[in-house]
Image (cartoon, rainbow, N blue to C red):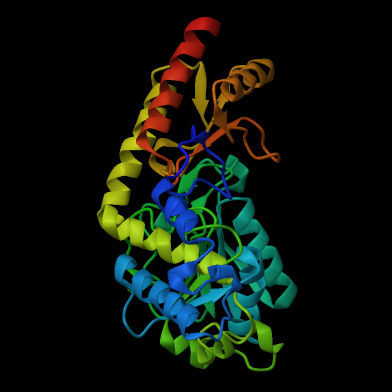
Length: 365
């Protein structure tokens, strides 16, 4: 009999909420995984039992996200931050340039790493507008001989998200989708490479997913350290070294939950419904709450807002914590408030936050 616990209203930006049914299933299997007498954390990564877990997670991600059969799915480590370096190491040769669209802090970090390794150029930026919006597609100016074009699909700190992706033609399109992967259907064929830390929508921290078009493997550099070569990880099915086995197991369980719940299209429907609750509370507050992002760039995942004074924000965050809300502080670099309503955050949590915001305004407006 599983113990019933009172779940927090978890709005952490990452690591973030996981689906309760997934946690309960992991709890049931923690000590004795499928009759092995061992936890999945104790299995050899070379065992047939773990290999089944590993390959099923790959197959499920391809199925649920509509990934073409010939694309490669890798489970790596080091988070998106390591991908900031791995991408240019593998795909930015001497004499070529890589284009970066700057839409927030993580895009800036990816750009900075690329500049350490080769010629990275700024294709567009909204930094001078405090990253309140995503650049329009007609604002992207780049040559067709770029090694690749890099975007960050969702910006956790500033609360903006791409609604339409560039058609980059012959230029390989690379995307950091750490904070909105699996939140809505996309056309994966538009992308040459997608990478994402798992700790937002895919599972616990510790594993990074890379989705790689097959021709990119042939382009990847081979004169870099072995562990940083995509072709090595493709050749070894992400088992060149010991992978984060438990995180991959949990990722597979999250994918099962997404499939059982109705798939990525249902995730998008729910996410739009959840975000609308909180945005409506902001928009109807008469300026008591002020959203950071322009309305046509608003993120479904990270809802960022300020109050009229810093003192009022501090009071809001203290009382929200007392009411059971977790993770509503804005990123330390910008302050303010942020509600991260990822896939596993239930509708009821967003509804409760909306009600709290309305009541707080009544008491303090």
